[in-house]
Image (cartoon, rainbow, N blue to C red; front, side, top):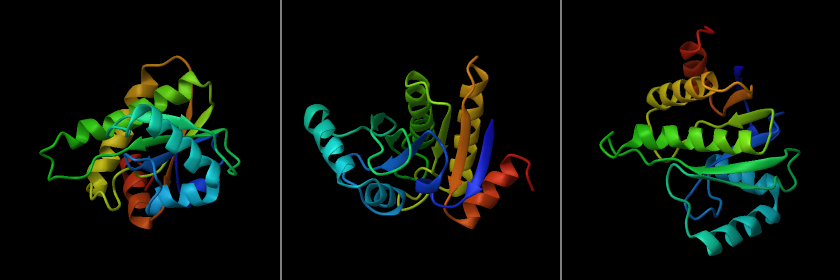
Length: 171
């Protein structure tokens, strides 16, 4: 089941939320900063420890932390690609963000997951292209599984919300 909402991902009712992180897992602007601020300092410490042990998180990969002060069961951090005019395998890297986050959600036994619009902010990925990749990837992934997972795309801005609604035929 896929649904779309307009709002703040930190208030999503999902078991686990996805953070559009930077490779150093330091928090930053946009979704990343909002999640780090809402989750509190424990997330900063967990991310620092992960980077110290593993190095920076590569684009397209994902890792898991607790939810800190958030009411969720955890946070999946993934690094989306920076848009380079479509010449740097951006579509595949973005798809890997969704696939790797979904794998973690299934491995941890979660019933629901909430995604932001990965890479559509300062990373510059065109919103329509990113929505197409996100929706197709999630639909294909879910279609290949017996287990069900409720997926919510949480759009922070009206433009992304309208694009997702249009792509899913909810005009």
